Amino acid sequence: MKELDELVKIREQIIPRSQLKRLAKRNNYAGLGFLAFHLSLIAGTGWVVHQAMGTWWIVPAIFLHGAMLATLFAPLHETSHGTAFRTVWLNEAVLWLCALIYIFPPKWFRYHHAFHHTYTQIRRRDSAMVLPRPITLMQYLVYVSGLTVWRRNLKYLFSHALGRIDPAEHEYAPADQYPALVREARIMVAIYAGIAALAVTYGSWAPVIYWLLPRIVGESYARWIRIAEHTGCDEGSDPRANTRTTLTNPFIRTLWWNMPYHAEHHLCAFVPFHALGKFHEQVHDKLAVSNGGYLKVHLELFRRFIRLRHGVQVN
Amino acid sequence: MEQPGKWHRAALLSDIENDDVVGVTVGEQGEHEVAIYKLGGKCYATADRCTHQTARLSDGLVIDDFIECPLHQGRFHIPTGSARSAPVSTPIRTYPTKVEDGVVYVLVEDLRFE
Image (cartoon, rainbow over all chains, first blue to last red; front, side, top):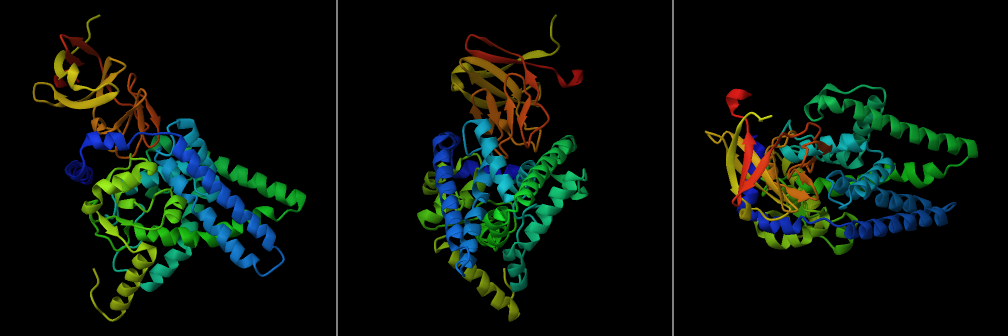
């Protein structure tokens, strides 16, 4: 496979395997520490929502809590790679927990995401290509709203639960796994139906207030972070140019399980999140790195929109 | 019963670190890509290409008695070749091994037998 051979060749030029092996060592402690921090923050913002009930503060509180729930994409992503924990069952349990809260079928995500790693930034192949060039302001706003992502995820969740696999999925999910994709969607839908039944029985709005509503409005934050990973980078299979690392403060980095070191992650996805900082120190001069935080990446995209509007060819 | 195929010299035992893997090619024309593992002093051999998207498993990571694909982190059980975690679902081929005078040999069927 051409893309894969190129990735391996470039990786070998950048870092020897002996060094990678040391970085790739797994443990449970880092993941448990990050998870405890993450869940504590979510509990904290949930408490803020509770305190804000009956006041106008409920609006920002719901957005804040939603942003925290959206960051669960980070452990969902790391566990989907199997790199969050050394112990497999722990990894799978956290993957399922995050997937249920995030409303994202986990096995389906694994296949979908694997394809993205193989064909990163290759038009019409990359399963997670955010916005191919040239991007317009309207495309940017629609993407950041999260509406397209909800439409896609819910479509897959419910069509899989009904036993239907979209022909477009045949490319990245092997046929012998279709029953597993259907099974996981049915389990998820059954759990959600159970929560809905309990809420109706007890006349409780808690699932809507503490989960669904924040989850819907908070998706924008996840999209805003994720747009920085590849958008505006080269379209091609060279990992030095098709993915961007965004340097940011330690709080955001921790919240996103070091996912801002995205170029390093794409260069070698078997290096676990907790070693990405060290990996970055060793290879940062060979990768695409934005050192002005997420705001700088987005301002650069806005600069492109303006140039595009004035008819200037934007690459 | 004698197994079909031929023993091929694959690697020096001393060239493989414990709990690690090396990739070699064997066969008359070097037509078989084989991953040789050393786990707890014992040698194993499997096909070197992942059944999911053909990444080279010898670039991957040995975790306990599993080999993790370097591209998508699917795992195979080294002694049996069984696929254990998504995105892999098709097993990899395993080959018998023997060690003589510090040299690892793998039993590979010639292509004409396949």
